[in-house]
Length: 384
Image (cartoon, rainbow, N blue to C red; front, side, top):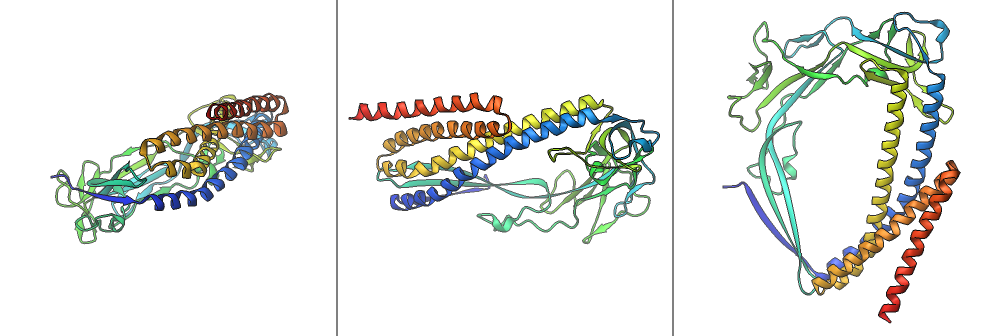
């Protein structure tokens, strides 16, 4: 039998109208917030592009093996092997590895709640919502808070006996240079690391002996048939590897380079890369982030207008089909408002930051608003 149960609730028409009216305020806040987000994003994109172009012009390629004092304070590019001295150790499990970073991943077998919700509108404006709660056993880091489950009885998750943990070598060097903590944080060439059986007796944790199992450790009776509360411990290591760095030289180390527009350049990339390819990749990332934030700003504005118009469809829900028709109509209006207003905001920002592109975009947005007004007037005339 499936471990699940279903709960059905009904919200009355007047309650729905009250909730939708409250949503108007939230919608107004969302619309208001969308404008500065869209405007700020365009300024951020332009400043980042200019500073990356500045960095590409000023960057000096240097020999990683020898620190050139003549490059002090300059933006430099080096490539070489990132290495460290000594061994990283997880003393609890007697794991030792010559690596740049070591991660211990602790996963516990525990309950997870999934919720599926379906709503149906009823004649008279009420809405019936059916929620189906299902429970499954999964491996997950940390502890899923079973106290917040709809049905916590029989689905209790215990506290894990230990936590995931990370170790980082210090110092990490590339030739004659020592990487800064900001650059070290960008090293991410992790791969699975198979531990060896401990030389002495396996550790006992919270009264349970950790069993060695195929390069990992297991706390529980049977790894092939886990029980709630069982724990498995695995490891990942970032081994010495070739890296490429672009940052400002500071003695035999690095600090972030700040462009004239305020953008910082402090890049590390796994592998051997030219300065040109790294700056091109950074420009591509900037473009992608710009488009992501544009879409986010538009979506926030669209849903804001949708909430503002929501009471109209709720009122019409006395007859569900009428409410659906009104809902589609208000959705179209929300889109036709959000799209040109987003374009206008971006255009105004571009007039401020990039006038040659901003003016045509503003004209395009104006055409969109004119079409919206024309559509509304035609609809009024048709209904007259």
